[in-house]
Image (cartoon, rainbow, N blue to C red; front, side, top):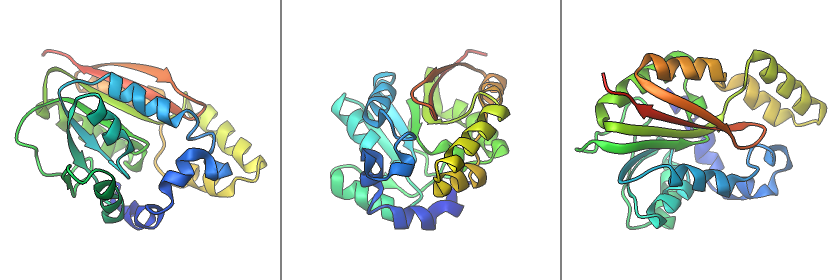
Amino acid sequence: MGREFNDLFDQWAESYDDTITGHDAEYMDVFDRYDAILQNVADKTCGFVIEFGVGTGNLTEKLLQSGKEVYGVEPSEGMRKKAQVKLPHITFVDGDFLQFPLPGKKADAIVSTYAFHHLRDEEKEKAIAGYRSILRDSGKIVFADTVFEDETAMLETIKAVEEKGFLRLAQDLKTEYYTTIPIMAHIFEANGFDITFERQNHFVWLMEATKKER
């Protein structure tokens, strides 16, 4: 359920913000337009927001700056500590996409960036199914994450990054649980959401899913 990556993220916590600002050549394309992507997610939300995979608090900060109330969930202790230093007035809880302390009220939106791929496809389905009950009527899920148009696009991307010598990125793409737009569309639609996809860079798509009445 994503917690198998906790050790990696505990180690990455100190250098994560350097990676996203272009100091790691292998990941420059993954984090291209990073600030704009986070702002796009924040702009599509309102009210009370549950954020999964807070990381070092970069999206949290944008949500707060735009007047949202944020309930932050993060499984990595190292990442939570970095976020807490950045945003000392916010409480971040230990949890993941599937197991987390409930906030005590329904959310207007559920958001996440660069994290949902840590779940296998069957876990993604379970997570989305569970979110209906904690969202208000017409509430939204707004995720920005690496997904691919289809399996062919995924394989072509892996081949391209290998040819560039980006072996760490290629290994990530092979071993983490990246999926395709058709699979994500099916998961959202099967669980009562209208879903749209908007490309943000070569790797990342913004997924905006609105809860339908049943």
